[in-house]
View (cartoon, helix red, strand yellow):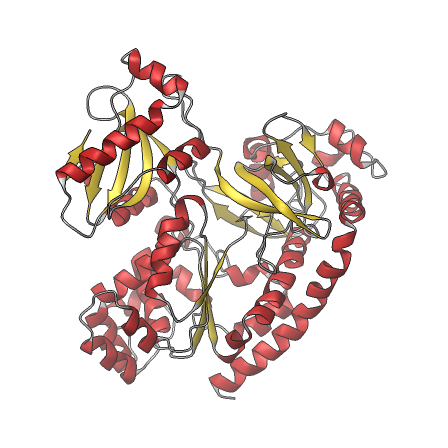
Length: 543
């Protein structure tokens, strides 16, 4: 069977398999409260059969109100001891469900965490994947005519020897049957994630993508990851052309292990004729059937998603919902982002009142943070994401992602991530692109302070940066606590630093801090202890 025929068969079968989940999602959307109460009852029956559940005081016939009253909100640290013992002794301590694997994740500032992916939890994820992909085929029917790239979240090289090939493959979130069928549609094999290094994984990804003129979907998480792929394509085009023309990995063969090498003399010729500059016309020639790009496009990711769209204008664009390694909250559906109500049990903290509300009690305009109870055994697990209720689809609340709740308080100034995002949204960048607002223990004057990192493809201009730094300082001064800290001399004045490759330099620093390739996102606000890393220090800075 040729690859084209296999792909078409895969799409046909996948659409058929997803149809049932899509129909159930639409049909039961009128019964949010009933579905959620049933899910919590089913969860509690599995929970009380685990060592943790037996010590919780929860009974399998307890009501929603009784369970939520007895179980406190939780964080990853509350499970750490049980998880370490569970991994060491290969036993189920959190919930009665077989464990398939442990998925690594890293937050904006946290070290790697290992999330247990149980059979029950994978089933919960499938309840969101089916309606999402089913709706994708409905909205973008042309994606069934080509192959797909769904991102692989690569892991640090030091962890690769102890990891299995399915560890960070987004395909592994599906059931076995759907995974086997979906594999017929994929352009990049999962073994890419375990190549010798992150650089080898990136090179292999590019080789498979460039060799595939039938690519119709590019699904990634961070738009900066997509931009990095396109930029790296220009930088390594000569090596890629050589590899694709011969169908051999060359000097990378040892690092690629058993990963087959694609071959395409036509792609090699295109690369050799290209000057390496990011050009929408070249990318359209490379991927003429590209119909959809999917990536984060809200909050700090918005300007980078726009740049990615400009480079790939032949494709439609769809933003991601709120997916985390710990669970899914929303996914794109019919032009909005409804609650994935058939996946986990959800509650929401109202940020104005502090009350914990069930999802059926939410009202438009509320700003909330989600708590998830999942088949991994996490109970009322606090997500650190701020959402706004944007409306309802049937009885389901729909949300807009506002940002992370990773606030910074260096000296009492109380800068939240949403406040930082509002500040950044007010600035006139005059050709620069914002990376992040860094809170540093020493911003360069022996005092803590805030530094805005910027990328520019033009020569940094002193007057423009000076004006931007003053805009930044004025916007921050609107916050009472920041103004007081400045008046007391506790904080240095806000600064702006611009470099042509600032985004790449920043991502290198994020990787050095243990964050996972492919999962790194740009945040409006970050706190890094100590001084500004030397690699980020300015060619030109203004304060």
